[in-house]
Length: 428
Image (cartoon, rainbow, N blue to C red):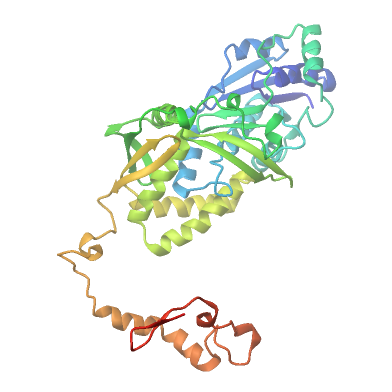
């Protein structure tokens, strides 16, 4: 290994990794820092990388591309891992991996490196994505192959080599942030019975102390958010504005025990105000504009979509093809959704669309009802035909006919019953 491109956050671990890679492999180190929003870009990151011994430091503003090419496709798919996690960290990894590969190719590097440990999901996401994009690149993870210093040892290591490191209060948690969400783990959170302490949260107020509820109207075109309260906004601006509004009302806290890719369960806390609001709004608009069968298939696709991303398989053919299906299904998901932000809850208060499949004249029970009630008789006759044939041949499930698997005790004998007799008396 002669030259390596390191995914560089500017924190203690990756700053020490710059010098460690140079010493252990006698390699030139180029750093890559990717700004994916949410406070992920540290001030002075280029200077810090150079002080640690990097020959060159790349800083890429990928916020808009992150939203348009990674966040929006997953919002369109309603993809939440295990129905809870909005995939904030997982969505940023393929973007960073792609940039790592591109910088490595531009620099003529023969390896890339990242600061992941051997216990988490991110190591898999980076390794698999890099090898999918360029199988010839070696992937090195210092924290996984021997660097493994304690925080105090890393501080001493940096001081001995004159490496500039951020002087911050040590957090008891492991935290990752980007525009779409904040992930928090370790410390007291490793006990699933323990309620998250107040210091876990930075983006959301305590729902019990939130101000009076407010409403916001979100406009969608083709399943993609484009406006707030009638004002068209750029993707990053829209997410950031909802982030602030949702956080101020305590919206977006997720406490989830999830199944990690490496085979263990992990308790994770997430803060994702904008993601929580937009997912709820998008599902509501889909319910208005998509058919029952499309919605049914979309639920299956959403789970697979989320799992592939969580597992680091963004660059697989299946993930690509699912994105293609989702994009096609979203052509008619346009309209507006009114959301109420109410003490930690994002509640759908109304929805409308020029492409709505909802017909009030068919749905109403009041004057103007256009539904032909008499036609229901024929529909029920045809719909129930297979069940009647099955019952005639095999007996109705639940009716005793000699097959133990099909028999259940009569309900009437098992339940308290009152019967009125002809003389008006009641028997129990």
